Image (cartoon, rainbow, N blue to C red; front, side):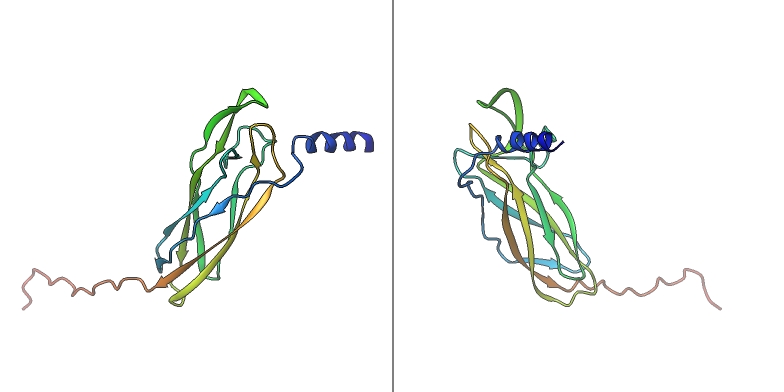
Length: 173
């Protein structure tokens, strides 16, 4: 059993290239204003270095590591939908008959933030991590985590106008 486990682990690690893995970068996010009680989408823009790609959020094989964003949000701010872009189907020299679903160049992940009515208006820092595995045309590197942060400014919800109740069309006598 130990020999099988050792062979299995050795086989998995041979698909990864030792050495310095390329790093994704994230563009600075301008201050986002989010109204209480409404979801606001925040675009996070990432760049894959030239000559590399990362698996999309929905890779075509269970053995591939998907690009995944995990966010921690302050109390009373709800994390909404995380919208990943569609990947591009590409084949590579290390597996020419298989198409992989990848991101390369620039890609954007949109994150929904939804401040509840109980949130005190003000600025809040959102933290998270983008986990990805970069590959070149020959092999893949060990997975990496990219810290993600951006600031939102929570503002009060718009006041709803108070309307007078409709008058009865009946004559009161």
